[in-house]
Length: 585
Image 1 (cartoon, helix red, strand yellow):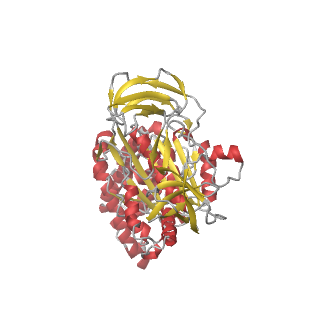
Image 2 (tube, rainbow, N blue to C red; image 1 turned 90 degrees about the horizontal axis):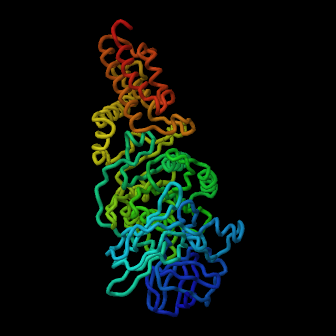
Image 3 (cartoon, rainbow, N blue to C red; image 1 turned 45 degrees about the vertical axis):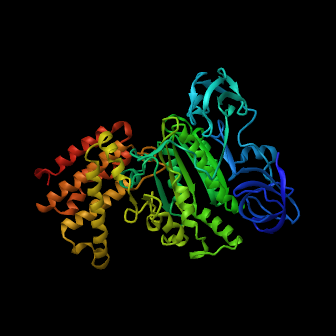
């Protein structure tokens, strides 16, 4: 039970000064006042401590007691996480709603994992085995899509002296006992872990597999590796949330952790209403069976945003330790940085550019470095990939959060307002975006898809760069003054943007594209350009090329040919060859 460790001395918004006890430690979790508001110690000086409180401090007054269990802010890790909606400090919102209704009172306590639910446990280890931290004791079918692997806690090792028989157990029930020179250690189905401490692993490995999203502009031009980090900056209405929804639904990650960090309430409500209705396209089961939600909206206490990011990454690391590939969607880190700015101001720290604290870059680095592909303590391989949106005011990518974020990520999906206004989605700019993971995953594409993938990608990117330079001339004097070869570049890029980069999330054929289909589509467009280039040199006009039936077939191929009929795209290459034979002109 928590004990009283001091009294409230001063209240400054979400920052509360506590006096009267020297037992508090940095980052200890405390409960403040008669409402037992959850907070965290962020500064110590003598017998005074500063606590950032993650709930509304209205009506809190000096003299009220402060309680502590002398442990850091931690989360519960075990079966029952998937399909649950939490707030920023891992309180289950649906459980609270059933208990209290729509108005959630301050200081409410609720276990993150259901203590009454029974789970079917199957032991995988045998008595007498010497187990190391992170070893797999058994498994629990958490959902139809995910098998939960019960792990030895990272700080425990020893000989397994007892393990439970197959059967149903609650999360608090002891299912194994380990013994070493320090004594016996009972192990249950769940464990606790401090959110600000990264979970250990055996070693970090170079990512060499792509996180496939089914979005052509991402997978082909700006791919993300499993274990990588990408920033998705864009102004209001450019489609940051849409990209994260599509990635959460269609990516080949095993687990999705979606954290709404300070987003508008209507956006988060839309996510929470729509996601339970989505079906996993691979297993035909509800997507919620492999998804965890952390909901923290802009009208919630600002300090809670700061905790929500760490709660999310800790849950992601837990499933990574089981050997799963996890995709963490953070929407958005700008709101999280605003929480840092608010707390820094309350703590009277020296501000830097635009009022952000001097430690903003180090906090960003601490978050992004917890991503990665690793060999786990049990010898499995898992990864945490971070897809973090950034909301720069006015779409200004030079502001502090965006500019510092670029230092710590290796992929950048810059959203373009002009593309979004023209209804071109995903509105990822092919001019400002980049990915440094291409060389890391090229072997995977060469082995699984085709050895031409990299050269085709470079060819189309070179054409897009040429188009960018030519458009400056076109804006001044118009396209008619350009020679036919340069007009062909413009025509090919227009074809590529409409037939390949633009994607309709509501079309059942176009919403997701396999790597194989992307490769064939790209190959067809590049092959068309090469044949057209030869024909133009022989005197064929660009307007005549645009009239060819095969041109319109290319334009419609993204919706015409479903995944079970890719042979038609291969045949399209033959039709392109025939279309440019001399006798057809």
